[in-house]
Image 1 (spheres, rainbow, N blue to C red):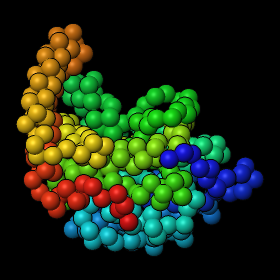
Image 2: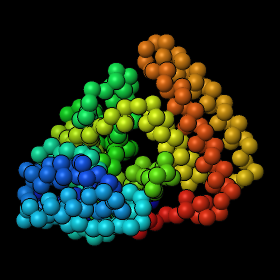
Image 3: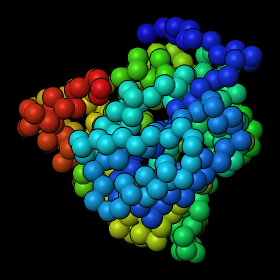
Length: 333
C-alpha cells in the first residue's frame, strides 16, 4: 500500500493526545505511572489518560480510582475482561479521543517533558509512529551479566542517544513508549496479539503493528529527548526470565513468519531440520562470543527455549485449525 497523507497537525493548533495504559495486577506500580503522566509539561487540556484494567485480581482498581478522585484531570478507568494486553490496548484506543495515541505500560515512569518532546515529531506528516529513550529503573542492583548483556531490547529498553532519527523502518519501538497517529493505528488494524493470560506469548504484538505501519508507507521516528523509565524488578534479572523472553521471541517469530508465508504440515519436517541446524549454529556463535567476552554463556540455554518454542508453535499452527484461524486474523477490534 502506498503512503497516504494523514490529517496534518499544524504548528498553530494544539494536538490532543490519548495516553493509554493497559494494566494487570500492578497495584504496586500503577499509581507511580499515573502520577508521572498527571504531571506532564504538556498542556493538561490537550491530553487524556485512559487506564484499561485487564482483569486484575489485586487492588489495582482501587489504586486507579484513588488517583482519579485525587485530581480534576481528564483520566478514565476502563475494564476489558478478555485476557490479553492487546485486547486492553485496542479497546482503550476505540474509546479514546486523541489525534495521537500514546501507549505505555503500567510499570513505567515518564519524564516530565515526554509528551511535549514526542508530539513535535508528528508535524512531519510522513511520520506514522514514534518512540524515544527507554531507560532502566532497577529495583535492586542488577547482576553484572544482566547489566552488561540485557540492557537492551531483552528488557524492552532503547537508548540510541539524545538525537532525533527518522527512518523508513522500526527504530526499536516498544509498546511501553509508542505514539501512533490515530488514523494510522486503525487503518493498520491495531495491535497484534501478544501476551494472553499466563502464556509466554502468542503473537508479535507491537512488532506486527509496526510492520503493518511500514507496509502502509509511513516513517518511524526516535526522539531521544522524550524519555521514559522502565521499572525492572528482581524477577526480570534471572535466567528464568531470560529463557521466557527467548521463548516468547520464538513464538513471535513463528507467528510473523507464518503470516508472511503460510506453510503446510507437509513442509513441517523440513522446517524442523532447518531449526535444528540454526540452533547448532546459534550455540556455536554464543560460545565464540562468550570466549571473546561479548556474550554470557547463559544465552546457550536461552537459545534452547527459542528454537523449542518455534518447533512447538509451527506444529500447533498446522495441526490446530482454530489456532491457525487466530493467527491468520487481521483485525483485532
